Image (cartoon, rainbow, N blue to C red):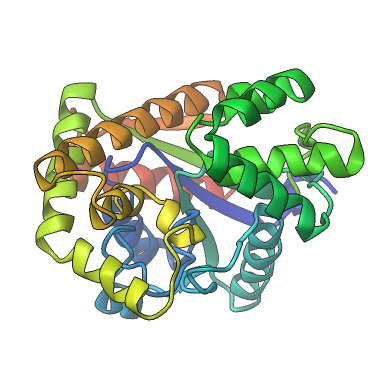
Length: 310
C-alpha cells in the first residue's frame, strides 16, 4: 500500500510530566481527533490518581480509548495493547475522525506503529516460578541470567521492573529465543510530534505532580484497592507512585521518604524515555520551555492541517 493510501495516525510523544495530556486534549478538539492512550498504567481500573488518568470531564470533551480496560491484578500485555489500539484506530477512522496516540510507554508505541513481531503466549507456571524466584532471592539472579540469554532486553529493561524482566525470561525459557524486537513497516501514515522541556523544568514538574498526587489521596486510593483484595504485587501497583506507596504501606518506607523516592524514580524513568525518544525517527519537536502551550497548539494544528491535506 502506498503511503498516501494508508490511514492517518497522529502520535504525541514525550517524557512523563512534560505536558502531553493537556496539549493532546486541545489538539484533539481542534482537529477532530480521538485519543488512544499508550500508557501501561492507565489501563487499570481504579488506579486513577497515580496514573494521572484523564478526568471524566476531559473524557466527555474528547473520547479516550484503551483506558480502564483491565482489572488491577490482570496482566495487560503489549500484545493486547496492540490489538486494542488497532481496533480503536479502525473504529475512529470509521467515524470519520482521526486517531491520536498519546504515550510515554515507548515499547507500546513502537509495537503499534510497526508490524512488530510480538512474543508468544507462555505457560503460566513458568512465570509463577520466575516470580517466586524474584520474591525469594531478589532481582539480581534473574538480571544475571537475562544478561546471558537476552542482552538486548537486559539493556532495555529497568532493573527494578519485575514484570518485564520476568516476561523476557519466561519467553526465553519457553521458546529458546529472546524477545522479538525488530519492527516492520508502519501500516499507517504517521505524524509524530514530540514535546520536550529542559531537565530542571521537567524535574520540577515531576516533583510538583508527585506532591499533588499525594495530596489528592494517592495513598488512600492504594489502601482502598488493597482492601478490595488487590495484592501488593498486582500489576497495577508496579506503576510509579504505587510501588513506592506499597513500600510505605508495608512499613518499609517512612512517610518523609515517600515523595523524594517517587520523584527520584520518576526522573529515572523520564531519562529512559528521553533516551528512547532520541533514537526515534521523524519526530517534529516542540520545546515547551520556549513555546507556551497556546503557541505549541497553533504549531501542531498547522502541521496537522498541512499533513492531512497531503
